[in-house]
Amino acid sequence: MTELDRWYLERDGVPTPVTLDEWLEWAAADYPGGTVGLTTVDGAEVSTVFLSLEHHPGSFYETMIFRGPHDLDQWRYRTRAEALAGHTRIVDALVRGDEP
Image 1 (tube, rainbow, N blue to C red):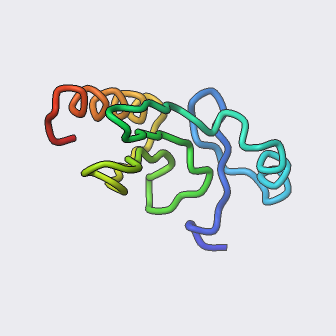
Image 2 (spheres, rainbow, N blue to C red; image 1 turned 60 degrees about the vertical axis):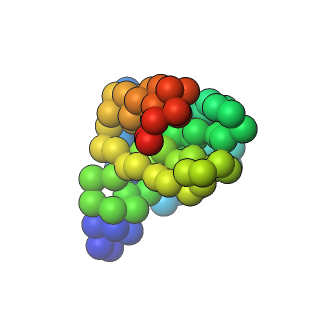
């Protein structure tokens, strides 16, 4: 198994490696705890989620904008705290009319 083949669950705000069986059980329960933030600003949806897979080394969380001029822009984070701060920063920028 390579490093990018690992599955993760968030435990106490920390991405923790788990077995495939543990991950499948979590996924079957509709990803509990997967959403970190979901905010709509002027019709654009800012979504921050726990990815559960390490898509890039050190990236377990992602903020993505859906719809609007920044459609599909994305940012990735290592920790839940960074993801929450990033979500807030991006929402605040959009509310002000600034670039996220």
